[in-house]
Length: 96
Image 1 (cartoon, rainbow, N blue to C red):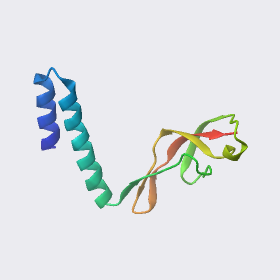
Image 2: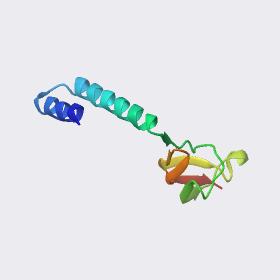
Image 3: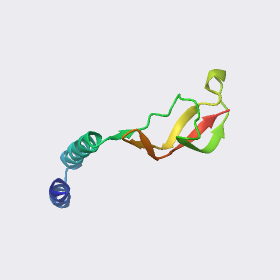
């Protein structure tokens, strides 16, 4: 929280967005590291078979490569695991 507060203050007074963006990137990396230590894992869906236990299909889209039929071709929103259990399904686009 302290890091975010410092970053927001720096953002108010900064005319150069590059250092501010770098600061937010560092905070993001620090936060994701802490969450990973606690068991949070981002779901990797693109290229995987569509799985109703992990994915919510928001639409399907024709694909040129027939090997991608029935597979996730794009993430609209990432899914997450916590200690191996799905805590948020990925919202995906599936190839047909």
